[in-house]
Image (cartoon, rainbow, N blue to C red):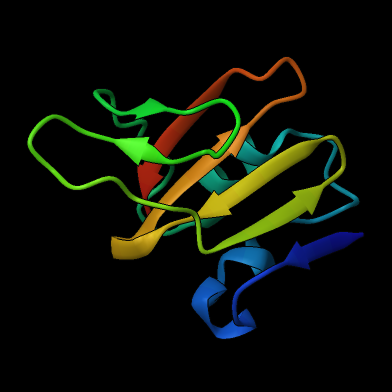
Length: 98
């Protein structure tokens, strides 16, 4: 089951359709397989572990708009099409998904 909390469903676009409960792979692998541009990890952001605010040197901070829960992973969507996957061990990575 996919659970979306906060924000407007429209901000997610097609992203939820890239996830399939019958596919045992984690979110990152499913996004990589089904999103036309694949999942391309972007390095350089820092993320506050409590608020999940993203910061990048020289840019204003980005607050998450909405959270998608899929199995034991969280997917956060931010302004400017930034998407973050947070694994159960709290490791995370970001990608731009236009």
